[in-house]
Amino acid sequence: MISIVLAVPQSVMAQFGYDDVDREATIYTIYNVEVDETARNVTTARTRALTNGQRIAFDRLLRRIILTSDKEKLDRFSDQEIQGYVSGFEINDERRSGVRYLASLVVHFNRDMVNELLSNQQIAYAETLGREVSVLPVFSESGTLRLWEKDNLWREAWQNYDVINNLVPIETPVPSLKNRLYISALQAKNNEQKSIQTYIEENTLNELIVAVATLRKFNATNEIGLDIDLMRNSPVTDDDEKGGGEIARLSVKLPKFNENGEDNMTALYDAGVDAVTAWVDDLWKMQVLVNYGISSKIAVHGVFDNMDDWLILQKQLGRVNLVQNVDLKNINIDEVSLEIEYSGEPEQLVISLAQQGVSLSQNDDNQIWEIGLTNVARSGNDD
Image (cartoon, one colour):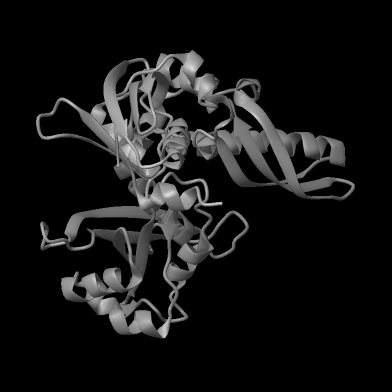
């Protein structure tokens, strides 16, 4: 167990090795950006593909770290401006012909420059990854419900959707025999807590979102749509006997056919998944959004069993973007006193540290902050 007090100058960051620590670097790296361009020659096609790929990645980055409602506050960026925020990119699966260029990009953005952009626009942003959420996709069409069936294209869309760039990791369950026995489509749709809690417990889930998508057809406008009812469920604890949480409804609509005259159903399902994952991300962002122009300090005294715990603590602190500086005040064989400077509110710091396996709480007299390592931190640092 470690007790601690927080604050922090930049010089100590180097002392702790923070310059070399991955401070949730994946937040500013966008993966799997697929590009496909055709032009008069492959050189022009490649240039266009790389330019468009960086724009796509920048849009995905903003979608990840700011609220959906804040996106409209930003002006449209030129290609040159976007490239100014890029610190580098990698090209994978490159293919080309005389006039066509295809590739998959990984784009890295400059954290400081993106932070400055958003701070200047007074837009708060999130840099803390959320805990994994599981989604149970129930599909409703003409009074028929589908969940585990092979022809549930709504579940298939979730399984195929690339959520690697989302702030909250998403897991979609497989149609195993055990899962079929735990819960049915009707039980999920009706929010039957006994079956839902059994499913959560047996699969050891942090949170379960039942997403019931109802297909709608608008013949007058030649459009198709999904009405998506969302029900959040958390594991039942001794303090909370309900487990059922927020309920929301989202809707998406697309033309029945795309510009090539092809059926748009797959695109509709993908749009539905995108809308739901954006909603999930925004719920998490509301807890961890930070204005980085303001910082605070708290003091922490730590007691640890061995030096390994102290080394792990240093490493985990360095991974939390809210932690701006750490000032080492005193250390001996089993105690440490620190001052940590951090952005945001104390509650946000507690949440962000918890994501890295570090518990932070005040003792009974609310004067000393106590910090400890959970199994999440220790298991993640096992060699």
